[in-house]
Length: 184
Image 1: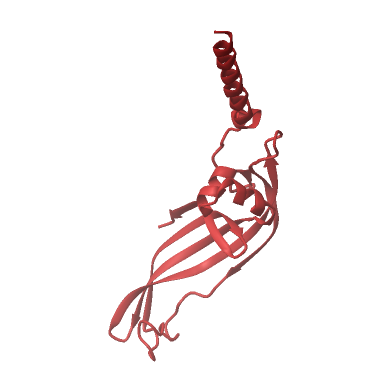
Image 2 (image 1 turned 45 degrees about the horizontal axis):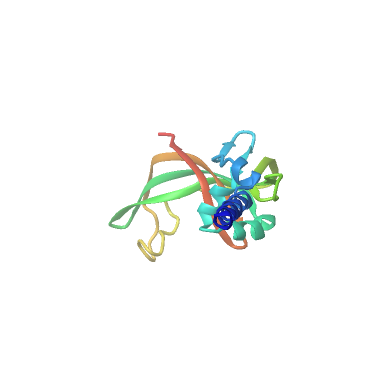
């Protein structure tokens, strides 16, 4: 009887100790916060879960690749035109304004086992932008639409502006948030 009772206590104690080993304070306190980003100030927070989901990574892969991640804020204005080339009429999307800000980020750790819980974005580090010339009569038609012809007529149909928060690892780029709105 004493032996069986001691065995039960030993098993219960071992089970309790194993439970403590797996239920660390880090596991209990980590809260996944979704992407919170202000496109005006370029400040926000991206959770580790959002980055893992975007790339299909495990926690261990995120831990190893976190130092090499680059967060960007892309922006654009796209104009859609109807273009006439010879007997053909077709739409063309013209990227009138475009640019990118590389964002300053800091990896945020849980404070216990130093697991990555997210990335704090603290503004633009640097950026680049540009504009391009809209399609006009007399310019060459796109080769895939009407090779060897020139544009006979152009009509602006609509415009849309947008921005995206992206993350890049090596040469693989993923969009985390995309916002676009039509102007007309």
